[in-house]
Length: 127
Image (cartoon, rainbow, N blue to C red):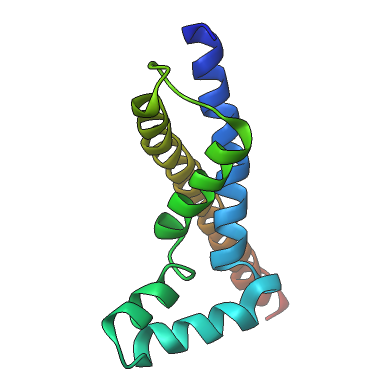
């Protein structure tokens, strides 16, 4: 695979990684399992139990595991064609996926702010 194709794969493969990581760690559809994990990440009796459950509440942490699964299913590697290429690809995918999630979070925050401003303006107009 040439360098251009590898870079294209990097930016495209990071999209589903970001989507899965964000959905599991933030969206309403996974709220109950996430609440369960949050509880045990705070109240777990052992260090390992707390850290294990924390992995499912942090999009950055969870994106590492989604990336490992993506690498397993796609056999994607970056720059090098041995195990080092998989390591480089893994960290690059995590970086790009988390950049996507950060942009998405900023976009959602901006939309929420605009909705709130509109509601305030509507209340002023009603008075």
